[in-house]
Amino acid sequence: MTKDDASILHADLDSFYASVEQLLDPRLAGLPVAVGTGVVLAASYEAKAYGVRSGMPARRARELCPRLRFVGGNFREYQRLGDAVMGVLGDFTPRVERVSIDEAFLDVSGARHLFGDGARIAGEIRRRVREELGLPISVGVATTKHLAKIASQVAKPDGLVVVEPGSERGFLDPLPVGLLWGVGPATRARLEERGIRTIGELARVSPAVLRGLVGRATGSRLGALAANDDGRAVAPGRRVASVGAQSALGRCPVGEAPVRETIAFLADRVASRLRAKGRAGRTVTVRVRFGGMRSVTRSVTVPSGVATTLTLTELAVGLACGALADHPGEREVTLLGVSVSNLVPEAPVQLELPLAGDDPRQAGTPSGLARRAVDRALDEVRARFGRDAVGHGSVVFGPRRGVPDAFRALAERDGP
DNA sequence: TCTGGGGTCCTAGGACCC
DNA sequence: TCTGGGGTCCTAGGACCC
Image 1 (cartoon, rainbow, N blue to C red):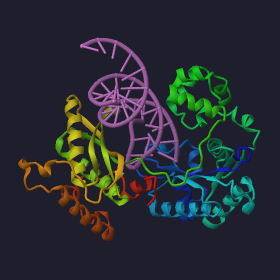
Image 2 (spheres, rainbow, N blue to C red; image 1 turned 180 degrees about the vertical axis):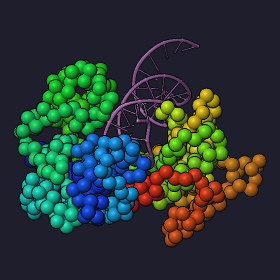
Image 3 (cartoon, helix red, strand yellow; image 1 turned 120 degrees about the vertical axis):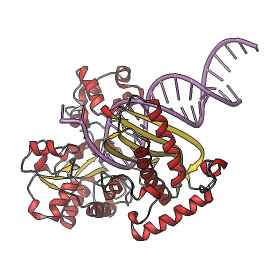
Image 4 (cartoon, helix red, strand yellow; image 1 turned 90 degrees about the vertical axis):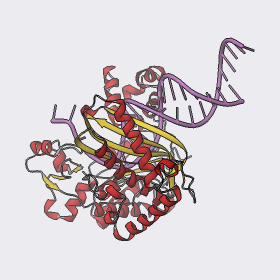
């Protein structure tokens, strides 16, 4: 309806974790900074200038930039400042769609009589975030979400780019296809084989050819994006569709005991997060990655939602053991993951599967109701004394976790 | 030089039902 | 009884994003 008005904003904090570290310790300002220990989670612009990238092993990063300053990470501060920035955005419109801890779309079409047009609001957002919170933030302004997102990427670092209605083609055409949402390394390589490097070149490819090149859905979507046809609305408060947890294990020899322990730890995390949301899940998926990055998944769908730690653990252990049995040649497990999807409301009195608890051969193991009571008690203790205060059996003494819980919590999309 | 953890969406084949 | 078409659900894998 307001297509002729640049009223969609994409606001994206610059090198967020690294910027927060430079804010907390002014001695780091202007220096190449990396957040993380074994792996770079975020790099400041000074570090990026040396080629340091997030996801890079720390050793490689030091080779590229010997002066690189590594800091451990203040996860609580990231959460607090990320929330504070969202608070600033919310002062301009309730139509804020938070995409991650440091990024959001805004639809300000209803706010112009109060605050001015999109460009003016974007400038005001940048000023307030800088003055009140001390952080650089880039903003893209355009007629669609997709274009606003590209504009904010082009604006970085610490910039503002407005794509005026009517100037879209001139803006998009020279840009590399990799800036399109949904074009990663695989798709980019396929397009490049056909000599397609810019969005303008992509826009000239016929829809049929494009679908043949990258698949039906991706082809249709890319064609639409390249033609600047993006009908997605800003959608505040989307519900999550799955909840999962995973742990990299280094190089762990295949064996049932460590697998069982790790799965129990992961299932406990996932189940307690589900309960905190009042959700349960019908489909349980386990991921096992072997040496050489070969990875397999096994899943099962049960008639009613699961949210108890023990039930999820049993299902997941069974799936993991099945995957191991299917690959007798594998020597090492390098990663395990547990994920629950097909989410439903957590039933007030949960109808659990007739699993071990109801199996006469395993008399003495807790029934569904007893399991719920155990979980509820654990959840309460943890709420008061912290996650590590108490746990299920071996989970307390379970495998060393590669990554702090605070970072895991940060990576969840739906905030604290 | 093979890197973490949390997600979304799509594809393709098979089972099953009408 | 045979054939066909359509829809839905499930499983496994892959690409992509932050």
